[in-house]
Image 1 (tube, rainbow, N blue to C red):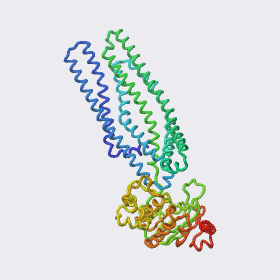
Image 2: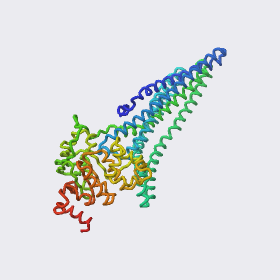
Image 3: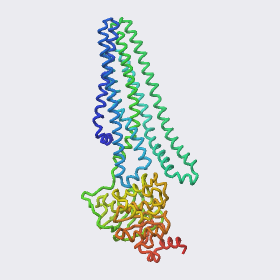
Image 4: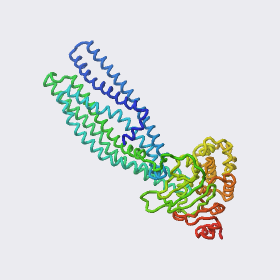
Amino acid sequence: MIKKLAKSLREYKTPTILTPLLMVGEVSCECIIPLFTKELINSIQEERGMATIVKYGVFLFLMAMMSLSFGIMSGWFGATASAGFAKNLRHDLFYKVQDFSFTNIDKFSGSSLVTRLTTDIANVQQAFMMIIRIAVRAPLMLIVAFIMSFKVGGRLAWIFAAIIPFLGIFLFTVIFLVHPIFKSVFKRYDALNNSVQENVKGMRVVKSFVREEYEKEKFSRASSDVSRDFTKAESILALNAPVMNLCIYTSMILISFFSASIIVKTHGSELNVGSLTSMITYSMQILMSLMMVSIIFVMVTLAGESARRISEVLSEESNLHNPADPVYEVKDGSIEFKNVSFKYSEHAERNALSDINISIPSGATVGIIGGTGSSKSTFIQLISRLYDATEGTVMVGGLDVRDYDIKTLRDQVAVVLQKNVLFTGTIKDNLRWGNPDASDEELVRVCKLAQADEFIQSFPDKYDTEITQGGTNVSGGQKQRLCIARALLKKPKILILDDSTSAVDTKTDALIRKAFREEIPATTKLIIAQRTASVQDSDMIIVLDNGSINGFGTHEELLKTNEIYKEVYYSQNNA
C-alpha cells in the first residue's frame, strides 16, 4: 500500500526528503540549547563575569535563530510536499476511475468514490505532513533528550524510564480501541454522501412527492451515525491529554523533589541549579515528544484506513484492455453476435444475456423492444465494449470488438444512453463533447437532424445559452435531442439510441428517424424504444425477453409471428 501511494510523490520527492532533514537540524539546536542554558546559569551563579555571560547568551541566541530557521523551512517544504502529494494522489485516483470499465465502476458506489477523493485524501495529506515532520521530530527529540538528560542529571533520568513504558501501554490501548471505530466510520461517510447526492440530484422528485421530511430523517440518521462513531472515538482519545498532563506534572514534581534533595545534600557538588533547569527542560521535551507521538499514532490510525481505501481504487485493474496489436480502423458498421452470453459478475446466479445470435448489416436501422429487465441496455453496451461478453463473440466491422483499440471502437460507436447527461457550460460546449473541433455550421447541421435547432434558436443566447448543472434548465425532451446531436457530431459508423426519444412527442420522434434515414444512410442505427411506433419502420426489429431473443423480423412479420410484439403493439394502438 505504501509503495502504491508513494508513486504519487513524483516531483515532490525533494521537499519530502528536505523536510525531515531540516527537522533533524531543528531538534539538534533545541537539544543543545539546554546544555548552554545550564552553563549560562552556572556562570551567573559563580559570577564568572559579563564576558562569559554574553558569550553564552550570544550562542543561545544563534542556536534559537537556527532552530527557528530550520523550523520555518521545514514547515514550508512540508506544506509543499503534503499539498503536492495530495494533488497528485487526487489526480491519480481520478484518472484511474476514468479508465475503469462499467464492471469496475459497479464495484464502487459513486458516494464512496467521492469520499475517497475528498475526505480520505485530506486525511492522508494531514498524516503525510505529520509523518515527514512530527514523526521525525518527536522520536528524535525523545531519544536525544533522553540521552542528554542522563548526561546532565544522571540517575534522575530513570524517572523518565519508568514513565515511558506506562505511556506506551496507554497509547497502545487507545489505538487498539479506536482503530475499529475509524474503520467503520468511513462506511458511514459513504452513506452520508450518498444521502446528500441522491437528495440534491432528485430534489424535484422529493418536492413533487412532498418527501422533504423523509429525506431530512434519512440524512439525520446518516449524520447521527457519523457523529456517534466519532464521538465514541473522540471520547477515548480525550483521555490522551489528561494522562499526558498527569505524566508531565508527575515527572516535574519528582524531578524537582529529588533534584532539590540532591542539591541540598551534596551542596551542589553532584547536581547544581543549572543542571536542574536543564533537566526540567529535557523533561518537557521528552514528555511533549511523547504527546506528539500519541497524536501521530492516532492520526496515522485514522489515515491508515483512508490510505487503504485509496489504495483499493488505485490497485483496481480494469477488466478491459487493449490487445497486444490493436486494430485502429473500423471498416463498417456491421454487427454480429455469435453465441453471446453475459453476466455482470462471476458470482451472479444467472446470465443477463443468454445465447444471443444475430447479424446486422452495415447501414441497417434496427429496432430493439422488450419489457423492463429484458436486458436491452445490456445488449447494446457489449457493442461499444462497455462490458465484455462472458461467452461468445461480439463483432463490429467483421472483427471481434476485443481486437480493436478501445478508443477507436468507441469513437465509431456513438451511444446516447438512457440517462442523458449534460454538463455545466454552454450548449456549444456540450455539443463539442462529440467533436471538439466541430465548426458552428456543423453544430447547427446535427442539431437540425436531431430536431434541436428550433428550440435552441428560441433561447436569447441561442447556442451560447448556459446549461446549468445536470441540464436542469432544459426539458427532458430538449436534453435528449441535444444528446442525440452530440452523438451525431462523432460521425459514427454505429449510432445507438437507448430509449433516447422517450421524452419527445411522436411527431418529433418521427422527424428524427426520417432525418436519420435521409442524412446518415450508411450509419448503422440501433433504436431501443418502448413505443412500437418508434421502431416499426426499421429494417428489422429484435424482441428481447429475459435476456434472450424472443423474435426477430420486420414489423409486419412480427405482428404475424411474435406474441410479445403483438401484445405491445395492440395495447399501444387500442386495436
